[in-house]
Image 1 (cartoon, helix red, strand yellow):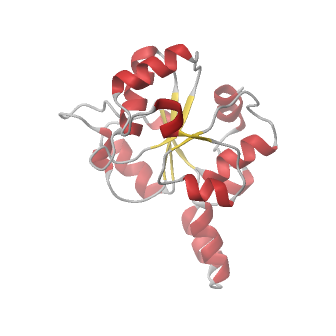
Image 2 (tube, helix red, strand yellow):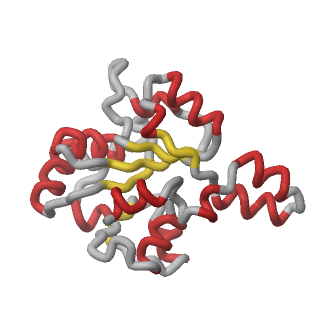
Length: 185
């Protein structure tokens, strides 16, 4: 998520973007000097409820949502954001940057917290999301920049970069120019 936001700001791909950052991620955004607003300053109540997101999206006339896909069991803020965006007809693009926690997308067996488009790190994640009912054309394998960076540092970069599919760097963090252009412009 962090490299994507950094790139969007640096290249002014989405100049009117407001970057709201959860308390768990604020140190990372601060360390990278990425301009952001603290989520708790914008919405006041943590975790953020579905109703609070619904109000925020409407008042601020949000047109698109780009977010992580955090577990609703620890903090349901992102899950509520995805659900509120769906109810408001606002497209959501989510990043799943690991291999666990696929249940995070479901509430009572329904994919209420599954974004409209999901970027994942490899074919294993892609296959698992498809098995759970996510439409194949809405799953995008984009790699994982930190795993790829680590792989290069330990000298096994060729193997791991191929294994994790280096779309991330070749395509500005999103799998296709069409998706990038349609979602962020």
